[in-house]
Length: 80
Image (cartoon, rainbow, N blue to C red):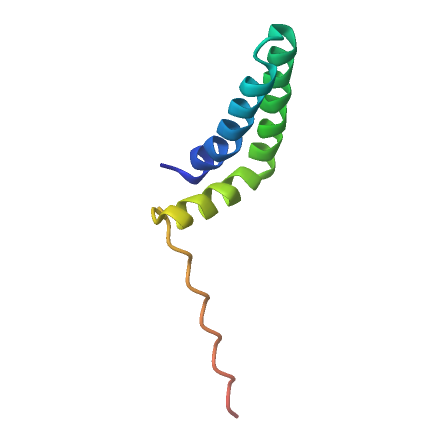
């Protein structure tokens, strides 16, 4: 699972379940809520925040897909 998909699922599932629980009797209001959630999650995807959240979720459950790159070694100073 990619970090983007994990981030979107981690953000969308609780929001949609909570909205379904609270707004299930008002169909039009629930649909408006779903559209607003989609806009908000879309914004987080385009800014890269969903990737960060997905990476944290995957690290939390132990399924990290990518290793962090090692820092480059600093060159030794030149001696005269």
